[in-house]
Picture 1: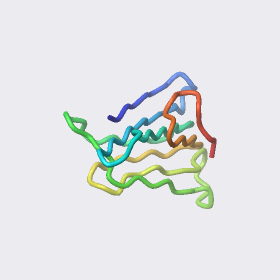
Picture 2 (picture 1 turned 90 degrees about the vertical axis):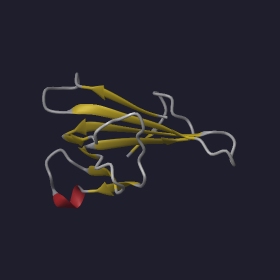
Picture 3 (picture 1 turned 120 degrees about the vertical axis):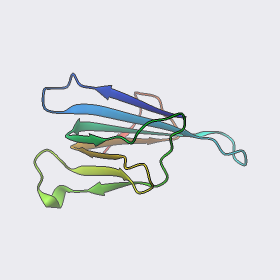
Length: 105
């Protein structure tokens, strides 16, 4: 299960984006949840969404050395989905995907 949440009320230039993914593995219990909240989103690229959607290999890259205004991180799927987010901050939660938990990067 994958969920997307978009909040465009932050200001006129940026927005917040939250990705919640739940990974079900019949060999493991309990189900693992991952929540990634991107704040200050400058660019969001979503793949065409159909009946099934998955992210194969998601990586977070620190772009602070590139000195891009308002952009510190790139969240990207290196699979075939072409999912990509450029943002100023990231909160990552593993195991608990509730909206109020997370560690700010």
